Length: 536
Image (cartoon, rainbow, N blue to C red; front, side, top):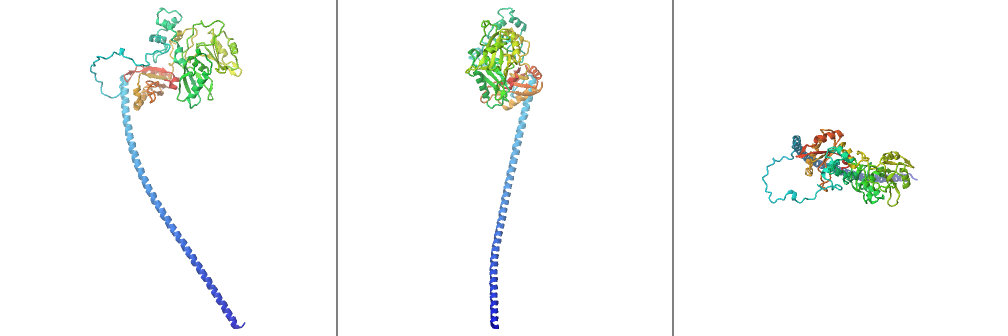
């Protein structure tokens, strides 16, 4: 190649390199410009987002400030309103306390003076003479039906004087005493002078018997499991006693339980049956399981031992009566193995003496033994010996429980004397309620006094303050009328439970005869088991 050709080729190569560099520079410039535009667009978006977030935060902050101010104003208003309401309530409470304190002091002053007047009204004005022409005399008016002057069943032929002389009805708060215990004892032995004596009429009366009282039809059931339905226990006892095969003389009934009353803690209940025989059977069932616990069934404390039956015309020597009426010598035998026959049980009992009556309780439908029997010996001296010999005896897997069927908690047993002589034995002893810690106050209030809540609280406070002068008061109960029952049991009575019997006795003696609301206060003891179950 010539030099000229070489130079042209070199120039052409340089030109191509310059053009290539120009194209590369142009491409870089275009790429840089595109990147710049994209970067500028992203930065604008970020700026807009940042401004938008800032505006949103400012709006939320303003809204929070407004809500906080509004809540602060509302709370301030509520605080003022609550303070005004509390201040008004406090003034009303202080005014009510002042009135109550003034009334309480006035009642205390009147009680100490023997003149307790309710209310603060004006003095009583003298009434002007009233024309009584045409007014029917009170003795000639038609009397409305009430429970006053209605003699209980079995006492229709007994006068009030005879009932008082019997000693079964002592005055409230007084011990069970008779006017002439020696004279009554002589009457029981046939040495009473005067054939027309009221005491002799009382002695030969077949109606005046402890077995006719309501206490003989009651049984106290304790150690109850925790149950929600009270009716479940009542139905259980009804079904249990109704399933026993009893003849008509034993007092069988479809529902043996007439009424019942549970304690506040639902751990005990006082049952009242239609007949005394059903109550005796219930006591013999003590130890039966209900709800996983064994029930403890006993007589109430005010139970009176039935009289000794003197009529032996129905008994023939060598024969055993199929019925055993309630008497002091009636024996209850429980926990008998069900596989023992009636002859086998009789053979065991005859080891101690001749039997007068025997009855084995059986199931009405299956005729199987219930494991309970009653018996009575001809010789009453054998009763205690048989009880001591048979009680605790092991028969197979069972241990016999043998005891007198008609023995109360505090009453003594009469052996060989009539029911009147049983009363004579109790002549110089206190009544069944004498050792209780419950004081019953009568003739103090009327149902109208219990309607107002403030007056009701004042009565409670007055009674508690007065009774605490004699000892520590655990609690007290004043039954009130309810919407469903305007006159429930116990309305008009006040019951106070002391910590010990000495304080209760002191309060009984001190409060008897005091004046309360122009009424003379009558005091008496009250059974503790009845107090627990509200059996007023």
